[in-house]
Length: 91
Image (cartoon, rainbow, N blue to C red; front, side):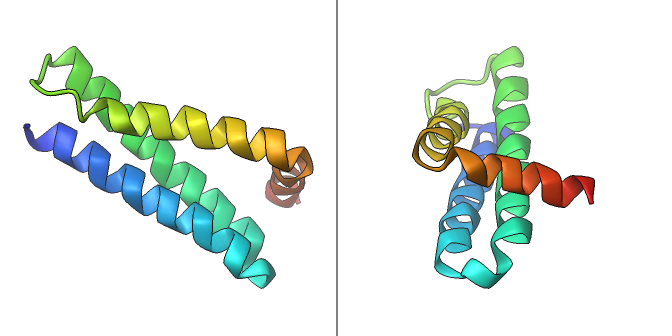
C-alpha cells in the first residue's frame, strides 16, 4: 500500500468515528455530522486518486464503501438528519 491508500483508510476511520460520536453527543450533532461527512469525503477523494494512480491493494476501496454505506444507512435510518444538517449549513 502506498501513501494515498493509507491516508484514505485513516480518513475513513476518523470520519466514521466522528459520525458515530455525533449520535452519542446529541448537543453537537450538526457540527460533528458535518465534520464526519467532510472527513469521509476527503477519504473518498484520496481513495479515488489512489485508484487513478493504480496503487496496489484493495484496502483503498474501504473509504469508498464506508462513504456510500454510511450515507445510505443514515439516510435510511434517519432521513431528517440530512435535512437538519442542510438547514443548519444554510443558516
